[in-house]
Amino acid sequence: MTDHTAGKRPRRTFSPEYKHEAARLVIDTGRTIAEVARELGVGAQTLGKWVAAEHADQAGEPTGELDLDERAELKRLRRELADVKKDNEFLGKAAAFFAAKQPPQNGMN
Image (cartoon, rainbow, N blue to C red):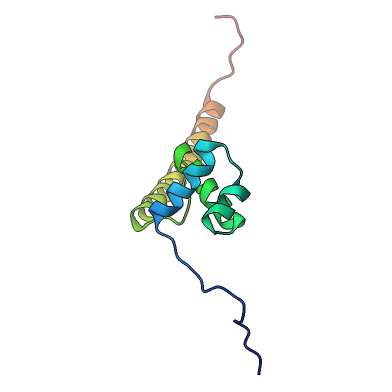
């Protein structure tokens, strides 16, 4: 039987602060992701994800799953949008109905 874990490093976890600081090293110094990754002993792809997340945080973009409050707000907004669309459709039909009841205007008033 062969050991499939031979030669593999154990999976490491990094704190959010560490990820932030590592990403800032790339962003603030202008060094490449590969350089900083080698220096820190992390994978370049991993560091690249941290850098992308840091850029997204700076831009105010969401980076992950919605929390419970955000899900509830999204559900409420979708429901509200559906109601507004129904109201808008009704008003369009009502406007067409009443416009059809108007006597034709001949342009000379």
